[in-house]
Amino acid sequence: MKRSVLIPILASLVIGAPAAWAQTDKIKLGFMTTLSGPIAALGKEQEMGLDLALKQLGGKIGGVPVEVFKEDSRMAPDTAVQAATKLIEKDKIDFLTGTMLSNQLLAIVKPVTDSGAIILSGIGGPSELAGAGCNPNVFVLSWENNTPSEAVGKYMTDSKKKRAFFVAQNYVTGKEHVAGAKQYFKGEVVGEAYPDRTTMDFAAEIAQIRAAKADAVYIFMPGAQGIAFVKQYAAAGLIKTVPLFSGSWLADEHSYKALGDLSLDVNLAANWFVALDNPANKAFVAAFKKEYGRNPVFYAAFVYDSVMLLDSAVRAVKGNIKDKAALRAAMEKAPFKSTRGSFKFDNNHFPIQNFYIAKVVKDGDGYVHKISATAFSNHKDRFASACKMKQ
Image (tube, rainbow, N blue to C red; front, side, top):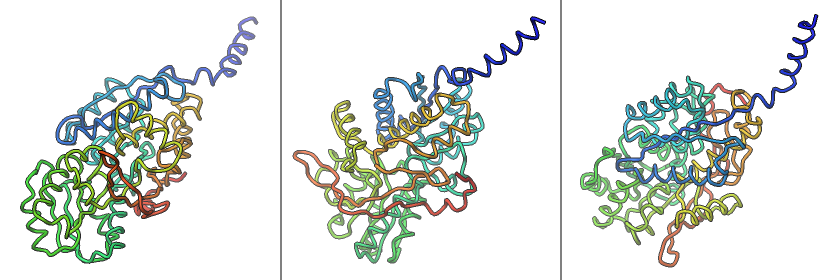
């Protein structure tokens, strides 16, 4: 008789305390990006955004202590798979952020999401994951790869350019960026070139541009390659007569010192700039500058946003990260203050966002981006219609 009374009492105690029991003791956050090789500085920028966000949150996400596991994915898909395997099998991560290169993201998305972990991509945004291959456990904080260059293509058209030559790194991201620019450029495409990501001599590409009689050049070359191209292009005497158009990656805090006044000659479009006038961005820029002694670059801003999105979602589910459906629903609402101001996800978990036109201007002894116009408002990628997820 005593036993029959005791069991219901214990059951009622268990039922009455689900919230306290559901909250996890620790969040395991994986961070994977390219920290060696020619674009290591870009991966380091992502890491700086991560570290700043976690410092501001007191080493917690949603009020839950966080343990961070960092891995260098280097430059190839197979090295990314090795890094991701360690994170999911040895470290048992709950979430993964960073993810610089799209070909690496495509290589790791299945094993990472099959493990139950949720990916918050800080840069990589391949169209394959935006359309029919969309994944409920993947949220992209940057863009679908075509979209920033769609804004560049529109800028070229609005600038009355008639004959454009397109140059990009020879891998999935470069080709998708070119496809985006061509989608909105209404003039004639007079040539394309796709040098390897290790190429640093662009004499052949510059000769092709000159022979094609282009009146504008689109370029996708983040990092050291972009610096080398701009310098050689200027040395060939073309930069004043055949202007360069690109995303903000072509001239920013990583390249101002190397390019000097050549930065003033490029035409840029992007979804984030230091100059964006909203409270969250002003606070982020000020905090970054205090921490690191200079203005941030978008690589840091997007990973910072990733952490702040995750923080808001974990708070919304009261720390119960095991309830993946509730956690995803919270993330889809994007209840955080983004460095871009207004922020929302489309049904494919890619952003709906504004893109801006900017030039580089002098600021004392340095350089800054000055926004001149909005290229797109609430711009959606064109692949979302093929995604079957609903929210």
